[in-house]
Image (cartoon, rainbow, N blue to C red; front, side, top):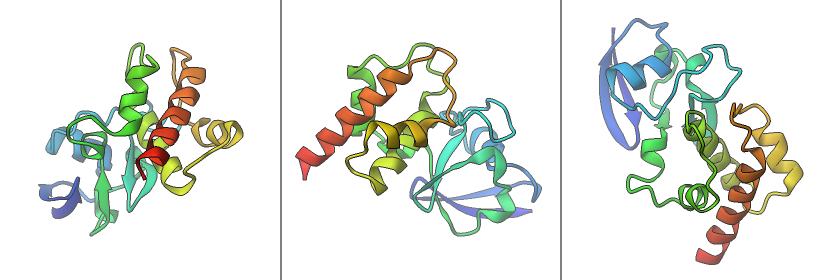
Length: 155
């Protein structure tokens, strides 16, 4: 079947089986490779994207349910890579292997949208379901605080 999707502000048409997870549509059919496959069962967070502004696991969203929802991948967060979270991630040297970082940043971006100045507890609770095998959790928290400060200063 053909589906028309709104991905990163662009209209994209794909041919896919209705039960195909958005993860595979985004990666294999639309070449948004920042969306990573980690577990396929909603545990790790590597495939996190925004759907209508909320962070969701793309491995759990069938293409047939995407409809006219606005999907944003890490590539669409900031096409030039200058989102405050992306800058903070570099400044704080968060990424080691880097595999989980797209999902981490997308989860953090949704957090900062709804809670512009989160506490450590709010960050830890929100980020708890995004796994980082390198264990950079304290740097992730610090980067989120730095990005929150930068976003507040820019207003």
